[in-house]
Length: 139
Image (tube, rainbow, N blue to C red; front, top):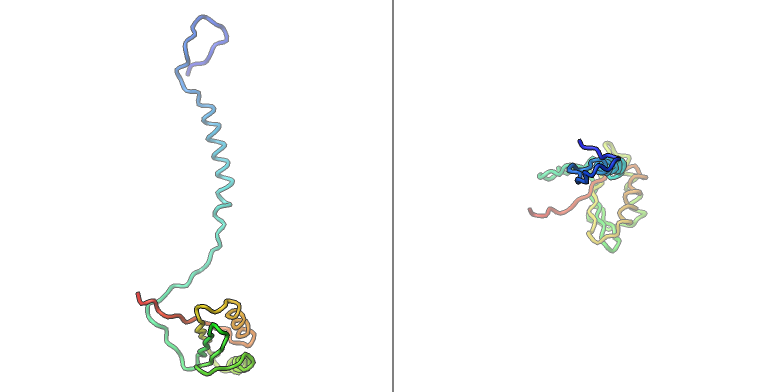
């Protein structure tokens, strides 16, 4: 490696080697920046996603089929009921052994708040197993 001289001996020759120190400084600064920002970029929430099955689930006779229309109407096994009657039926269903599972058939255009309200009502009543039923896509 050639070093520059303080005396001017008339050499005046240009330095033929690349000065690596500025390049190393830039590399170290970038390394520190990436070391600091990399943990911030990978703070994703780890969720255990369910696996989809291609075969339909077996429906037990005591499972509750609750349909929710976009207009807010409730249907218990095809029969129209009110919210107060739903609460009573859910409380009675929670007393059964084993506790039945609630299958919610919700309209695609139904407000999510109404679905969350029914889920909270079901949970308060003691029916904590809830399933959402959807139509297969035909693929």
